[in-house]
Length: 251
Image 1 (cartoon, helix red, strand yellow):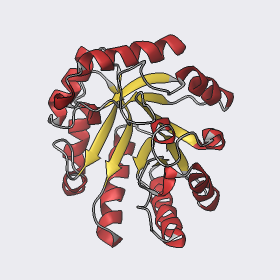
Image 2: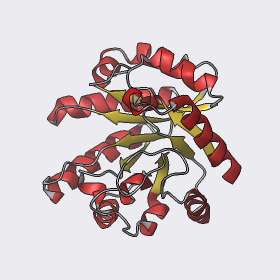
Image 3: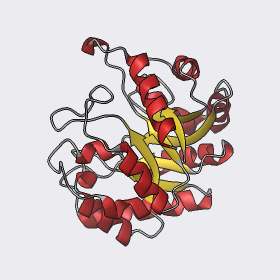
């Protein structure tokens, strides 16, 4: 296992500046966030010019890209075309793990299975593993549903964000069965009342998390995912540094 950090920690900054901040914080590995609504790399931008996207993702100030997290708008063929381009980007940058969101609540189960099977089919051609993010407000907010999706879609894995089983409607739910399917982790500290709190003030059991992952020979990233909130009054850079040091102390 190793520690990384996501460019999504700095949602208001362009990619170059977000990467620079992570270097200042002494991270050596990076998860690159790709979303249409953000200020960094967009799925449509990747699709329009994969080579340029590869160039941007290689200009990481000597940090190693270890994962992509993508949020693609739309559906149907345009959706799959953008996903296909992101998989080509992952392969070109030697990234194995690519995170996608599960369907919103109310999505028919069979339709979600079909979508995920198509994503896994596309990603397999590029040697990339699809991780389905555990997330409040989506189908994976219930760990049992996340597990059933993995059982129905061969080759699908989980991007485990344990915060969503500390906070939200399934707070306290047992998510241990997901560890064997986990290909990536996104981490912050969380309480039952707030998704993001200061490091040390929440209820995420990092030592147990690391021990459980080790049982299944997990050898991928523990990615810091503390999103900057200028209105909170919290020293974001200090929190990022604290989380890095905490995770490194457990490895």
